[in-house]
Image 1: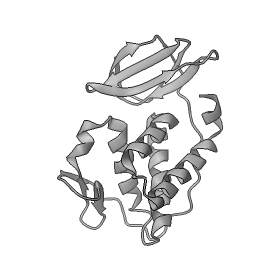
Image 2: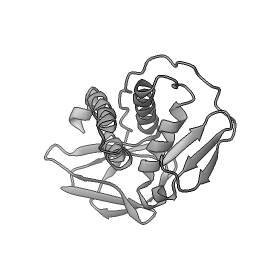
Image 3: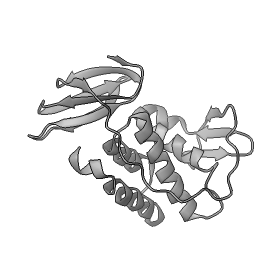
Length: 187
């Protein structure tokens, strides 16, 4: 199934499982009330479940403060795949993103979330953990806008952020903000 833009779907199947590029992309156990979800542009294989197209779910975006210390976005960001202890980091002045090849072994939304976080550093930097938390929310909003679902953001932060104390604070911050999204309760 090829999707060219953010698309909404509804299902009453008890379980759905959708794959992309040979790995799981979106799966959910569906309750009695059914499920409405989005898929971003991509080429998917439906392994389980049936669903019909509907209007996309337009999730309320998470609240962010105004940018601090912004740097203009470059016209062409270069991604350099190389092992890096930080998993992914950005040089906002040279327009380069250094990404660990391990992300190629994870579902696409994990790297999309990490990449979006790094893009957030063009807007939020110089404030330590607060900048990191703002970049996390910025990335989540990018994914929601593109057609990913809150559960995929939840999965991405679990796979991309460590369980050290500072990192756990970031995870909880994202989760608290995801719970504020009104439609999160219904989907």
